[in-house]
Amino acid sequence: MTVTQQVRDGSRRRSVFSRSASPAGRRGPGRRPWVGLLFVAPMLALFLVFRFLPVVGAFLLSLTDYRLSGRWTFVAVDNYTRLLQDDLFRQSLLVTLTYTVIFVPLTVLLSLGTAIMLQQVVWNRGFFRSVFFLPYVTSIVLAAVIWKWIYDAQDGLLNAVLGLVSVGPVDFLGQSGSVLPSIAVTSAWKGFGYSMLILLAGLQAVPKSYLEAAMIDGAGSWQRFRYITLPQLRPVLFFVLVIETIGAFQVFDAMYVMTGGGPVRSSYSLVYLLYDSGFKYFDFGYASAIGLVLFLIVLIVSLVQRRLVGRDD
Image (cartoon, rainbow, N blue to C red; front, side, top):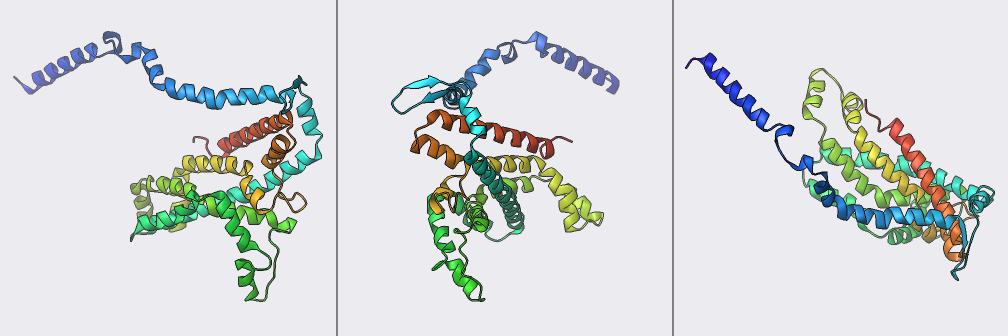
């Protein structure tokens, strides 16, 4: 048998096999989509029960004047109208936005810088990853208490260091201009470890061939990072930006422990207002309206981030 005949015979066998394995000739899972639904049904049920239904319930609750006694009155959109006229809501929204503008870039830059540094570490890399990740697994209340002592105007560690250079004492948590940056530093120290690991995984996924080709072409470290590494990190950066933005809009614990919303409500966030409305004044309908508005704000900000950072080229 000649080589040409062998090629023709092999092509004939492959065509017969292709016809037998075609979608029209087999009865596989593609013809039974309900099989896939069975696999995702448990997670779908959990999502509906613990995610979707609470959102629907919160929306319905925001349309009522519901009290702790169980009595309620349908008020339609009165809670939202009241929200727009509430000076305290506008102030807490401004505080939350200001905190987000400070916290998100600080955390992303700290996470990215640490990830780049850890990528260069060769000796005992796992140990250093654990050290930087350790604050993330600690309690936010514990971290807030520790940093509250560090910021203390009289006996704090930071003011003791500043005193060595004849600066201070500075009341970091007692001044309106410094309270939000101080809390943002605490939260960034507490939570940057998770984003660091995500970004480190993204850095390690950048193809080495791209970087090596750029080095051969004479590109420096900054050029390789700007034109190769950073574009490859876009999906990871988008994910980190979204989760850190959501965390910033939901800030409450650190402010509650470190300042109690003060001074003069300078650290009084939207979630703090929601907490007071629901669990201090038992105005559950108004608190639900705050929660729904917060949800819409986060959704809009996430869509803007998707447009600016997460879009496909």
